Length: 594
Image (cartoon, rainbow, N blue to C red; front, side, top):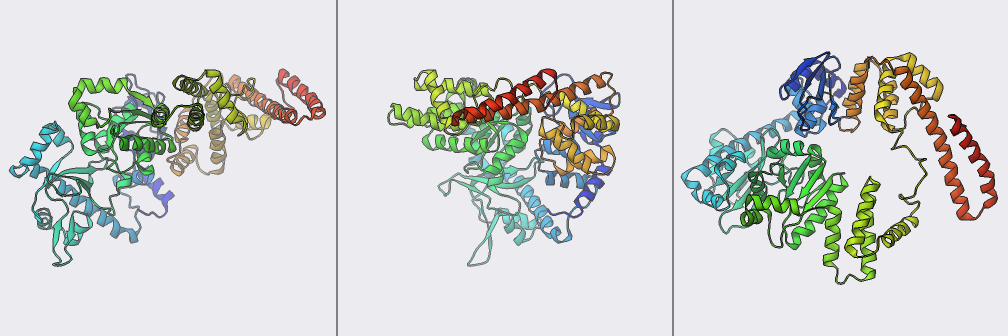
């Protein structure tokens, strides 16, 4: 959907909707002081830490650190992109955000949804009727119960060539609209319309709001292909959607983890087994769009693909795609030749759960196991090659502790002494630049002691509320106050905007709705205006930390220069630099800077 005067429309929507009323539709809120509090919908908790401010039109959870405005709340709750959340809230507020030239396409999409919802109900009733007995028998053999059939709105398409088409035409839909939905095709010879799905078990593919956007169909006879999907339409694209997400999204959010399987039946069976956070990738190799869709709901994905060679290779590819969008990945390797449904049938629910608990590993360990399994021989040359391959995956990890654990795992599994693996790892790093494992003697503190975000946020909130404090800090330490870029970016953009404090914050959130910094904006907004008896002391501590950091950066620059000169053998320059280093050390001790 295209938009005009977007900023104006956003402000209009915000003025029409109240965040307390919106959130109260899904979260029970109680007033406490100036704010409303409730149990956070984004993580499991027993004591309310989820705060909503009517004055500021923002929310923030002090437990999971999620925050924002009405748009970010809906995006987080329903896994929507900003444009999608804008559409939903615009409709709720009665604000028209469409361009006149786009209304025809929008109307066509609405018609397709109406056709699909009507068809899904038709297929479901057909499954429950006498003509659906074969399909019900098949589901019974696969262990699918009646409750699950209803939960997924499973259906049956009969062998009749025009049954659904005639039904939809009888409901008032035009032949072209039915064809555009992908549910009917047109005969080249006679110009007649006939059904896409015939004698197939039907799997409706739904949006978060249960609207049907497409279908999958499994052949119950000899017809090929075995699985058939709705073709690409204005509404449906396989690469952008996941089967079972409508049913799984709340569980994914609750667990912060999604189980990813290959097929419709695997997804249904795992959810029926109790693993409600399960989705399937619609029979395609996992795409970046699908990975990003999963990331909207949780930070982690557990891949449970088939145990055959094709499934294991697909697992590696899927893990790479997920890592590419910064999703954490675990993998469960199934026995050779089995899929999740097979394992449930052979082991039972309890046995399946035990298998999962005992056979989960990280994507890096899985990759290492595969490399070792597929190697013709684990000679020294092969082991060095494997270390080189796995090194790239270890480098992506943000934690040095994690990196260290995986290096130890490499040594253990490859049966090489740990110190030799460390040497090989560092040698490869040395050829690429400075090692991430080098000890900087506590100098680089950007992500350690100085990164006490609580203090930085309190000072930022106080500065925005008190212009005198702002000027005081600015006169002492200049305009680059913060160690963390997101706080510096915050104050730079805040200064650029016009309007009241709250107007500026709302503009910042709406301008960057998918930015991870939105929660920071909300957290700072919640702190603004709060009284703090220790603010003067904390402000001085903040100024001292900034000055200390400047000194440490000067020290680090000189240290790096000396190291480079030592490699070059330029010892005369080193002596000159040592004088400057002594000066930096003196000023650091005195708490000042050069």
